[in-house]
Amino acid sequence: MNETEFIQELKLKSTSAYSQLLDKFQQKVFSTCISFVPNREDAEDIAQDVFVEVFKSIDKFKGDSKLSTWIYRITTNKCLEFIRKKNTKKRFAFLQSITGNAIPIDKTDYFTEMNHPGILLENKELNATLFKAINGLPESQTVVFTLHKIDGKSYQEIAEITKRSLSSVESIMFRAKKNLQNTLENYYKNEY
Image (cartoon, rainbow, N blue to C red):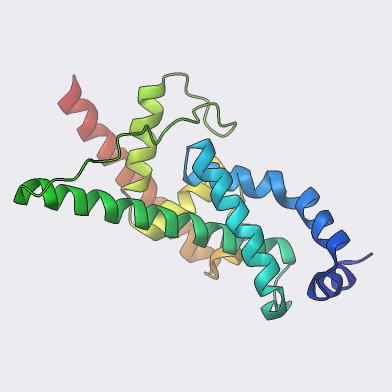
Protein backbone atom coordinates (compact mmCIF):
# COMPACT_ATOMS: atom_id res chain seq x y z
CA MET A 1 0.00 0.00 0.00
CA ASN A 2 1.48 3.37 -1.03
CA GLU A 3 1.30 6.50 1.13
CA THR A 4 -1.76 7.92 -0.65
CA GLU A 5 -3.73 4.69 -0.13
CA PHE A 6 -2.52 4.52 3.47
CA ILE A 7 -3.69 8.10 4.13
CA GLN A 8 -7.03 7.24 2.53
CA GLU A 9 -7.38 4.26 4.91
CA LEU A 10 -6.57 6.55 7.86
CA LYS A 11 -9.21 9.02 6.69
CA LEU A 12 -11.72 6.16 6.60
CA LYS A 13 -10.78 5.57 10.28
CA SER A 14 -9.51 2.07 9.54
CA THR A 15 -8.29 0.44 12.76
CA SER A 16 -5.70 -1.64 10.88
CA ALA A 17 -4.30 1.54 9.26
CA TYR A 18 -4.18 3.25 12.65
CA SER A 19 -2.42 0.20 14.06
CA GLN A 20 0.14 0.36 11.22
CA LEU A 21 0.60 4.06 11.87
CA LEU A 22 1.38 3.35 15.52
CA ASP A 23 3.81 0.56 14.59
CA LYS A 24 5.60 2.78 12.12
CA PHE A 25 5.74 6.05 14.09
CA GLN A 26 5.30 5.32 17.81
CA GLN A 27 9.01 5.01 18.62
CA LYS A 28 10.00 7.94 16.39
CA VAL A 29 7.38 10.23 17.92
CA PHE A 30 8.34 9.17 21.45
CA SER A 31 12.02 9.85 20.62
CA THR A 32 11.18 13.36 19.45
CA CYS A 33 9.01 13.97 22.53
CA ILE A 34 11.74 12.87 24.90
CA SER A 35 14.20 15.13 23.05
CA PHE A 36 12.06 18.13 23.96
CA VAL A 37 10.72 16.90 27.30
CA PRO A 38 13.28 14.63 28.98
CA ASN A 39 10.82 12.95 31.33
CA ARG A 40 9.54 9.51 30.30
CA GLU A 41 6.01 9.88 31.70
CA ASP A 42 5.46 13.32 30.18
CA ALA A 43 6.96 12.24 26.84
CA GLU A 44 4.66 9.19 26.74
CA ASP A 45 1.62 11.39 27.48
CA ILE A 46 2.61 13.85 24.75
CA ALA A 47 3.20 11.01 22.26
CA GLN A 48 -0.26 9.68 23.05
CA ASP A 49 -1.73 13.16 22.46
CA VAL A 50 0.09 13.29 19.12
CA PHE A 51 -1.59 10.12 17.86
CA VAL A 52 -5.00 11.24 19.13
CA GLU A 53 -4.46 14.52 17.25
CA VAL A 54 -3.29 12.70 14.09
CA PHE A 55 -6.35 10.45 14.17
CA LYS A 56 -8.72 13.37 14.87
CA SER A 57 -7.30 15.68 12.23
CA ILE A 58 -6.21 13.28 9.45
CA ASP A 59 -9.08 14.68 7.36
CA LYS A 60 -7.31 18.06 7.39
CA PHE A 61 -4.10 16.54 5.99
CA LYS A 62 -3.78 18.02 2.50
CA GLY A 63 -0.82 15.98 1.32
CA ASP A 64 1.36 19.03 0.61
CA SER A 65 4.09 17.34 2.64
CA LYS A 66 4.95 13.77 3.52
CA LEU A 67 2.80 12.16 6.21
CA SER A 68 5.89 11.81 8.44
CA THR A 69 6.64 15.55 8.15
CA TRP A 70 3.07 16.37 9.14
CA ILE A 71 3.29 14.01 12.14
CA TYR A 72 6.61 15.57 13.25
CA ARG A 73 5.05 19.02 12.95
CA ILE A 74 2.21 17.93 15.26
CA THR A 75 4.73 16.32 17.63
CA THR A 76 6.86 19.47 17.81
CA ASN A 77 3.79 21.63 18.43
CA LYS A 78 2.51 19.33 21.20
CA CYS A 79 5.93 19.40 22.89
CA LEU A 80 6.13 23.19 22.71
CA GLU A 81 2.59 23.44 24.07
CA PHE A 82 3.62 21.26 27.03
CA ILE A 83 6.78 23.32 27.68
CA ARG A 84 4.80 26.58 27.51
CA LYS A 85 2.25 25.28 30.04
CA LYS A 86 5.02 24.06 32.35
CA ASN A 87 6.81 27.43 32.14
CA THR A 88 3.55 29.29 32.81
CA LYS A 89 2.95 27.20 35.94
CA LYS A 90 6.50 27.94 37.14
CA ARG A 91 6.05 31.69 36.60
CA PHE A 92 2.69 31.61 38.37
CA ALA A 93 4.19 29.76 41.35
CA PHE A 94 7.09 32.24 41.45
CA LEU A 95 4.74 35.23 41.42
CA GLN A 96 2.66 33.67 44.17
CA SER A 97 5.74 33.11 46.31
CA ILE A 98 6.67 36.80 45.90
CA THR A 99 3.21 37.96 46.96
CA GLY A 100 3.13 35.52 49.87
CA ASN A 101 0.22 33.47 48.48
CA ALA A 102 2.46 30.52 47.79
CA ILE A 103 0.99 27.21 46.76
CA PRO A 104 3.12 24.06 46.80
CA ILE A 105 5.41 24.05 43.78
CA ASP A 106 5.71 20.86 41.76
CA LYS A 107 9.14 19.68 42.78
CA THR A 108 9.17 16.49 40.70
CA ASP A 109 12.36 16.09 38.75
CA TYR A 110 11.63 17.16 35.19
CA PHE A 111 14.83 15.62 33.85
CA THR A 112 14.31 11.93 34.59
CA GLU A 113 15.28 10.52 31.21
CA MET A 114 18.98 10.98 30.93
CA ASN A 115 19.60 7.82 28.93
CA HIS A 116 18.21 9.42 25.80
CA PRO A 117 20.18 8.10 22.82
CA GLY A 118 20.74 11.62 21.49
CA ILE A 119 22.44 12.72 24.71
CA LEU A 120 25.65 10.95 25.53
CA LEU A 121 26.62 12.93 28.60
CA GLU A 122 26.85 10.70 31.64
CA ASN A 123 26.34 13.24 34.38
CA LYS A 124 22.68 13.87 35.24
CA GLU A 125 23.41 17.39 36.48
CA LEU A 126 25.13 18.31 33.24
CA ASN A 127 22.15 16.95 31.30
CA ALA A 128 19.70 18.94 33.39
CA THR A 129 21.80 22.09 32.90
CA LEU A 130 21.97 21.48 29.15
CA PHE A 131 18.22 20.85 28.79
CA LYS A 132 17.42 23.95 30.87
CA ALA A 133 19.76 25.99 28.65
CA ILE A 134 18.14 24.59 25.48
CA ASN A 135 14.65 25.29 26.82
CA GLY A 136 15.78 28.81 27.74
CA LEU A 137 16.44 29.63 24.09
CA PRO A 138 13.82 31.48 22.04
CA GLU A 139 11.24 28.95 20.83
CA SER A 140 12.40 28.80 17.19
CA GLN A 141 15.98 28.12 18.35
CA THR A 142 14.83 25.44 20.81
CA VAL A 143 12.93 23.67 18.03
CA VAL A 144 15.73 23.78 15.46
CA PHE A 145 18.48 22.86 17.93
CA THR A 146 16.49 19.99 19.46
CA LEU A 147 15.37 18.53 16.13
CA HIS A 148 18.90 18.72 14.71
CA LYS A 149 21.28 17.99 17.58
CA ILE A 150 19.18 15.72 19.76
CA ASP A 151 16.73 14.13 17.33
CA GLY A 152 19.21 13.87 14.43
CA LYS A 153 17.06 15.53 11.77
CA SER A 154 18.74 17.14 8.76
CA TYR A 155 18.37 20.86 8.09
CA GLN A 156 16.18 20.00 5.09
CA GLU A 157 13.83 17.89 7.24
CA ILE A 158 13.67 20.66 9.84
CA ALA A 159 12.85 23.19 7.10
CA GLU A 160 9.91 20.99 6.03
CA ILE A 161 8.71 20.35 9.59
CA THR A 162 8.88 24.03 10.61
CA LYS A 163 7.80 25.39 7.20
CA ARG A 164 10.91 27.60 7.00
CA SER A 165 13.52 28.06 4.31
CA LEU A 166 16.76 26.10 4.54
CA SER A 167 18.79 29.30 5.01
CA SER A 168 16.44 30.39 7.81
CA VAL A 169 16.95 27.05 9.61
CA GLU A 170 20.73 27.37 9.24
CA SER A 171 20.64 30.92 10.57
CA ILE A 172 18.46 29.93 13.56
CA MET A 173 20.82 27.04 14.31
CA PHE A 174 23.81 29.39 14.25
CA ARG A 175 22.08 31.77 16.72
CA ALA A 176 21.03 28.84 18.94
CA LYS A 177 24.62 27.58 19.16
CA LYS A 178 25.88 31.09 19.96
CA ASN A 179 23.23 31.64 22.66
CA LEU A 180 23.87 28.20 24.19
CA GLN A 181 27.59 28.83 24.22
CA ASN A 182 27.06 32.14 26.07
CA THR A 183 24.52 30.69 28.51
CA LEU A 184 26.66 27.68 29.39
CA GLU A 185 29.83 29.78 29.58
CA ASN A 186 28.13 32.12 32.07
CA TYR A 187 26.73 29.19 34.03
CA TYR A 188 30.14 27.58 34.45
CA LYS A 189 31.83 30.89 35.32
CA ASN A 190 29.31 31.33 38.13
CA GLU A 191 29.50 27.69 39.26
CA TYR A 192 33.25 27.26 39.48
